[in-house]
Amino acid sequence: MNILFHTIAIEPARWTPQRVSRPLVELLPRIAESGFSEIEIFEPHLGTEDSSVEIKNAFAETGLKPVILSSYLSLNPSETSDSDLDAKLQQMAERIRYYSFEKVRLFPGPRMNPADKQGVEIFKARLNRLLERLPNVEVLLETHDGSLADDPNVITQIVKDLAHPNVGLLFQPTFIQEKESILEQFRIEEPFIRHLHFQNRLPDGSFVGLKEGIIPWPEILQELGNRVDGTLEFVPIGVCGVDEFDLDATLAQARAEADYIQSIAQSTPATTAAQ
Image (cartoon, rainbow, N blue to C red):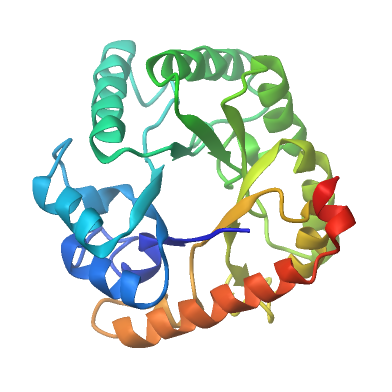
């Protein structure tokens, strides 16, 4: 299993209007020094331009490979008109081409109701437009709450209906309430899972280490074997305000969590991984 590092993990302004507190070019050398080689990029870290020579050079200089673009493009028809969508798809295509991303992460219809059948059909049509624009890019639909992924059966049916080789799910628990509901979601979505987002929490939503929360990562990895990769998304020490954020401590905790994931993956029986 390859463990990618998500740059959102070291962005304390991630959920503020500011979005970014430090330039990506300052962060990349530190990520590389922590032993990571492949990364998922929090889209605001790329700025507003489709391309940046400075950022692209920093990828080359640090030896970091940008694999996944964690995009905030909305395919919700109530939020994006058709003309706006065309312009945004063109911008995404240019950005992916310039930085050589292999995959893009999308929220599957943010703020859409899974019971809205007409909306689901529009979402699928729009996703097909994106796939036509990005024929060589894998699209990962993140099972994030507040989207069509709120219903595991709806999001899996969407993937079935599209039947496209470049579409799959990026799994994380949609609702972190208790272990059995998480495993129930996982069992429904497992055939379509192509990537994982690693984090863990308590039922009250607070972030904790991967060993400590209610998401049963050892059981999930036991079932998946080593047939999918994952991204280390959040570590608890890094979920704080900009003034309290400690980059060194966050990267150290991220390295320890990645080593823990690898220890689980390596203990997975070969027969399971081959299934």
